[in-house]
Length: 430
Ligand code: EPZ
Figure 1 (tube, protein in one colour):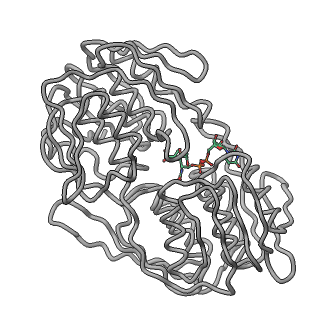
Figure 2 (cartoon, rainbow, N blue to C red):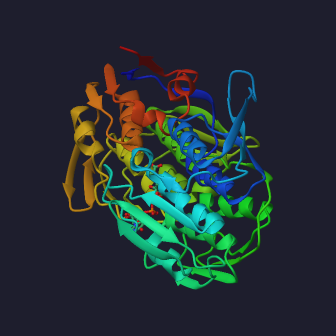
């Protein structure tokens, strides 16, 4: 199994190209189930989760062709992928596939909207929390779906004539449930109004792509999304938006090590709140023609308190990385996680590098230390694992991160991107 070996102490200087967003690519790929025409997605990142979803969509009858091409010599391998689902050949998403990646549960929306039925395995919990699917079920029921749960599967059927548009207000903001209800409602009879919808940029990206396919969606990016149902959707060509979590992660890495890096092909509007927190921690962040410049020269890292929240708040997917940064702050900071109940597994691993962190309920108190020391550590989930990389970059000596398959789910060519900026990071295959 691969491991990542980091020898800390180097500053980061150079250019890091930012990939297309994993969390936009996944729902966009799933949207291909809504049409018998071809959906072409550009800037699709090469990640384990994308490959897994390709297998899942193939199972439902989506024909997939990849035009790998080097967009810029040696820098980005973003791919253009064509998805064509002439016929849905199977409306069942089995446990073996859904349990590997939670987002595959989202196929329930398009399958139900296009075929009138879907049988999708419950995803189960995961390392960061229980992650129930009650909001998906309630929302689809509001669109007149009949839903039964049996033997670990959700069996959903639409009424004769298809789903029926309705008003539904989410009792809690959910990115996934917003994606699914929005996709399902595109082919429903009549108008659907979703209240308290997620406002994440990935939701806006999906809505924009669906509109390019002929859907009639307005209000994306606000808490109220209106979807006027249409008879059918066509194909489209759409470019996946930049990955704001990857952007924030590398910005925090530079804030941690010091240095001067341009994050290319991304933009500040995707992560204002997180960038503001990084600025307060002592980095200078400016917009450039090609992306974002992050600089920290001289000054130390200042302690900053943050609370995670749905967009536009501080993203939970950057919480672990920010904690990594705060381990070396000149003082004490507090990080409160409000989205997932168990997203602190990195605390014990950061402690192995010498971090001083104590937990009280959903809040972590981080007492900054002047030096971290490299150690063997274990990745526990995608974002937790990259927080160990950030800490390792500033630790003295060698940090060996095991279970890097977590990293490969969401960070494209991480070791290469960091090495090109002067870090000492390598993949070790046993
Ligand atoms: C998406 O997950 C992201 N995944 C997550 O990124 C991200 O952490 C999360 O949104 C929050 O921003 C993808 O986009 C593929 P939610 P999702 O539904 O949609 C609760 C990463 O590292 N909830 O917005 O599954 C839920 O338990 C991943 O890339 C219910 O209670 O998250 C959580 O507490 C990890 N009932 C909260 O809502 C439901 O039916 C928000 O979850 C659905 C969700």
